[in-house]
Amino acid sequence: MLWVHVWTHVTSRDNKDPSENAAPPNGSRVSGSPTTQSPRGEPVLSAEAITKIYRMGDVDVHALSGVTFALHPGELVVLLGASGSGKSTLLNILGGLDTPTSGNVLYRGGNLTSADEAQLTRYRREHVGFVFQFYNLIPSLTARENVALVTDIVDSPMAPAEALELVGLGERMDHFPAQLSGGEQQRVAIARAVAKRPQILLCDEPTGALDFRTGVRVLDVLRHVNRELGTTTAVITHNAPVGEMAHRIVTLADGRIVSERRNEKPKDPSELSW
Image 1 (tube, rainbow, N blue to C red):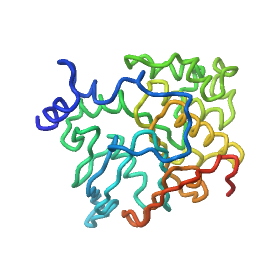
Image 2: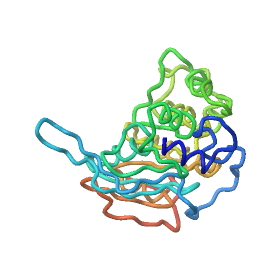
Image 3: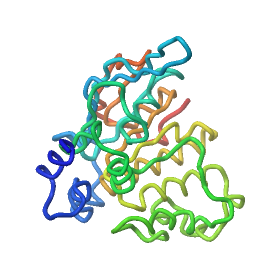
Image 4: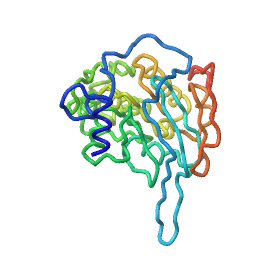
C-alpha cells in the first residue's frame, strides 16, 4: 500500500490506476530537436544500493553488490561490462522483470521494489520498451503484425506503420521475419518496443548477434529514437567502442559500478569501429 500511496501522491490526476499517470503525457515530448549534450534533471528511473543474490545449491552468488544508478530524462546511457559483470541483472531489475534482494528502484517517485505483480505488469506495459539480443519475433506474422501485438495493448500507441517508418522499414513492413535480414529483424524489434511510446527504452546487447556493419545500423536507429522521440535509453554491451555514442558511459565489474564518465561529444554510430 505504501507504493500505491507514494505513486498516487506524486502523479495522480484522477482515480485511475496510479501507474497510468506516472509520466508526462507522451505528447509533451519534443521531437525533431536532437541534442548531443547529456540531458539532466530529476531521474526518470533510479536504483538505490541494489543487491541481487542468487542461491546456487549451497553457494550464494552476488550478481549485484550495492549498485546505485540513475537514468535522466532524454539521455542515452551505455552500460559496459564483461559477461557476468551484472549488467543484464541490473537492466532486468530496472525494467521490472526481476526484483532486487535489497535496495530500492524508483520510477518517477514510485517505489517499484514494493510493487505487486499487477503493478509491475502495468509499469512494463505502459512505460518501458525492451530490446534484446535475440529478436523474439513471431515467424507467422509480418513485421507490421509483430508491432501491432504491442500497439493493441496500450492506450496511445504509434501506428505500426509509423513505428516501422521510424526505423527505416517502411517498404518491408509486410514481410515475414524469414524474409528479413538479422539487422532488419532487430529493427522490427526496436519498432515494436517504441511503438507504445515508452518513457524508457532498455536494450540488452542489441548488436550482439549482428555483424559490424549491421550493428552500426541498429545503433544508428537507437540514437535516432533517442533524439527524435526523447526516449530515455539504456544500452548494455560488452563492446567498449559503443560507449562513444552515449551521453554517459557506466562500467560494471563483479556486480559493482567501477567507473562512470560523461561524454561531452558523443560520436555518430558511423564513426565507431570494433
